[in-house]
Length: 142
Image 1 (cartoon, rainbow, N blue to C red):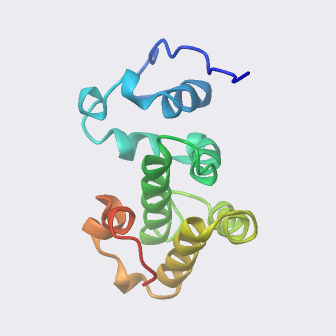
Image 2 (image 1 turned 45 degrees about the horizontal axis):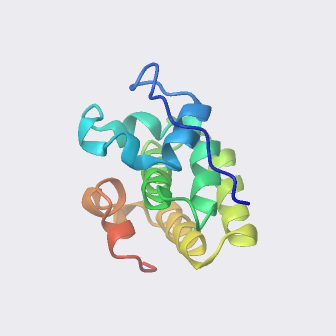
């Protein structure tokens, strides 16, 4: 017997989804297309309040929206590093990187490697790669 996830009923507020809404959507992403989302929705959800949920989704190789979650992790890391950790706490990013290396697969290990490299060499930041999905579409270690 397979367990079906509950039917996703949509977001109460698309620009500020709850963790539960984001999780439900991630397992049924075709229920609401990314094209119907507000502009820069990826940037909106890549904040501190949802980063734990996004990380959980990125950890799950069976999550249909895993690439989107990984994309958000790249945005989160770049945003924290570029703002010298005024946007996001350095401690939280380091904890996520450690967890990615200890619990994640090669995809998350690559994200952690790239984030650590960007921390030590912020001049490597490229908006297309980090915030527009370049490192997700063409995964590689920098």
